[in-house]
Length: 467
Image: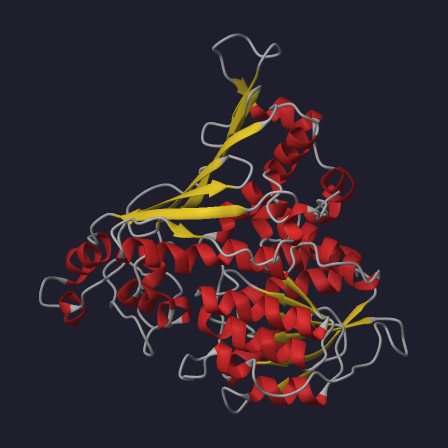
C-alpha cells in the first residue's frame, strides 16, 4: 500500500498553481467581513482520535497537491472540503478515495458555502486554495470561526487594507495565519539561508528576486484545457477554464507586482524581515503593456473580440525596497513576455553572494578570485536539515519536494501549538508589495512608506523560520 501510494502521488502531482474552483462574483470586502461575527471556541487539536482535522476551501489541483501531503504525513484526516463547483468537489473526492481513507463531508451550492462549513465543523487547520480575491474573506472567516491554524495560498492579500485585516483578525482571535509560500522551502533557498545564518556571505547588503514566468498560455485557454493550445480558441473570464477564469482579469484592472511572494519570501527570510529588520519603503515602475495584446493578435488575429481589450498591467514591473537595516531589494514581475522561468534570486553580502540564474556562488577567500563556483557543491555542504532528513519522502511530492517540506513544517507547528512558520506578519509584509507597487506606479514611481504590520515588535522578534 505504501508503494502504491507513493507511486500515485508521483503520478497525480502537477506543477503549477492549478484550478482553484471558486467563483469571483462576490462584492464583499475583507474589511467589511472583519467587522462581523465574534470568535467562537473550537475543540482542541487532535480531539478524540488524536488526528489533526483538516478542511479545504477551493478544491482544484493546488488543493489536491496539499491533500497528497496531508495524507502522506501520518496523524491527519480530512474532515470537509468546499467548492462552488460540484465538478471540482467530485474530482477531489475521487482523488481522496484512491488513498483508502474516509471521504470528507462536502459543502457547495453558493459562494458563501464555506461559511456553513466553518460553522458546522471542527478543524485544527483549514487551507484556502481559492482565487486571490477570496483569500482574505475566507481567512478572516476561518479565524473568526475559531480555526486555530489557517493556511492561505499566495498571495495572501491584494491590497494594503487586506493585509491589515489579516493581521488584525489574527491578533484579535489569537488564531494563527500561515502563508503557504512553498518557495521558501525550495532546497536551494534553504541552503542559501543556512549559508546566510552561518555568515558565509558576511553582512547582507542586497537582494534580488521576482516572478518571471511566461503565463500567457495560462491566462488564455479554450475553456477545456488548462494551457492554451496553438490554433485553439482564445478565452478568458467565465467561459474559460481554471485560472484563465479569474487570473487574467488582474492584468486588465491592475498595474503593479500582483504576485510578489514567491520571490520576496525567501529573500525576506534571509534578511530577517519582521525579526530584527523590516521593509521601510518601496518605489515601483512598469513598462508598457504589450505582451497579452500581442498574444491575442498572434493567435486569434486583429479582429478577435479580445483584441479590443486594454490591459493595464505593465509587461515588466520593477519594485525597489529599502530595509530598516540598510539593505536594498529589487523585485521583478514579468509574466506576459516570452521567456524561460526564473525567480531571479540574488543574496549578496560583504563576503560573497548567491545568484540562482546560472547557479552561481562566490565566497571571498574560498572561491577562486573573480571566478564563480557552481552552487551545487556549496549547497550539498550546507543542505538544510529539513531536506537532509526528509529527502526520500519529499522527492516524490509536488514542486520538486518543497510542497512536502512546507506541509511537514506547518503540521509540526500545528501539532506542537507553535507559531505558524510564516505568520500573519509575513503574509502581510510580503503581500503588501502588490498594493504598494500599484500605488507607487500610479504616482509615477514615487516612494511610498511600508506599513509596520508588527507595530514595533520587529525590533525584538527573533528569527523562527526553519531553525
